[in-house]
View 1 (cartoon, rainbow, N blue to C red):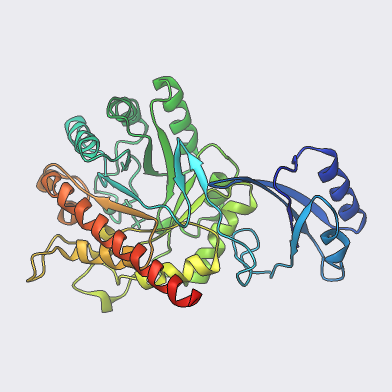
View 2: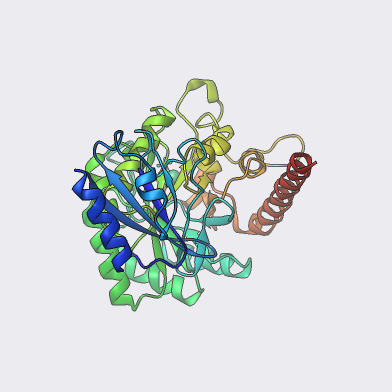
Length: 371
Ligand code: PEP
Ligand code: MN
């Protein structure tokens, strides 16, 4: 059961304390969540335990309560519970992430040379982007492939990010210790930028790692859908993060592993954007680069990666994670799927066009529903 409080109710005040006491006397545990919305702060009190016999009226009539929602077992913390709850988002480094926002994280799959990072971030800044991707810890299929520079590159990556006013870097972590390494490097660099901790598809069910990113609230989490598990299993993995206390999670589709996707690297699954938005309160991202996995163009002149991006955006995606590289041939990881820096302005023009079309579709359907 979730008790949503009236706007302005203080999470640490007497009303919430007495409400929690009343609930705990009924044998359930309570958990208070503060949610920063786009326009208001929202406080929710979650009741955990056997709530089936507790009538909602017990709380619904209290002056501090806006409404009471009975939740299903599934996706307890992140679910919308049959549309009873609105989406929630978060603001990080002054950037708003929710089911209405749309951000492009264009960057390197893997940090290689300082010069690539410099040129990549300068290109982002020129294009008006303050969000990028930079892999320092790379989970590779072969142990003989480049594994990423790890903590060693963080000082200069963060310094260059600060120089180009990059506010958020999506960066994969493959071990709990990486969270501390990132925190320490940010501190030492004087906090010039921020990091969104990426959980890669290979770690989608690494429950200890999920708990570790959930146990901290400093960094938001970008969760990549597990490539060989069901959508439900991936959404449950996000609940692992949330149930440890961190609900600042973006769910990112990245294609699923199947030979049926060939010649693409994975089978593009962006038709699931509205599904995840309907089932959960999370913003939903897409990664067209790891879905398509190659730079080829169609006869219409548009790269398959741009077509896949458009498929996700026309369906309402809130974030695009996409690989670029100043010299893809020299990239140490995933060069064949990297777009070049001179393609970035056109990529962003295409993104804007499709996003506008999505917003126009929203207007059209809203008019239809009102009429
Ligand atoms: C990545 O984004 O760098 C990556 C490895 O993606 P995924 O985990 O989706 O394969
Ligand atoms: Mn990659």
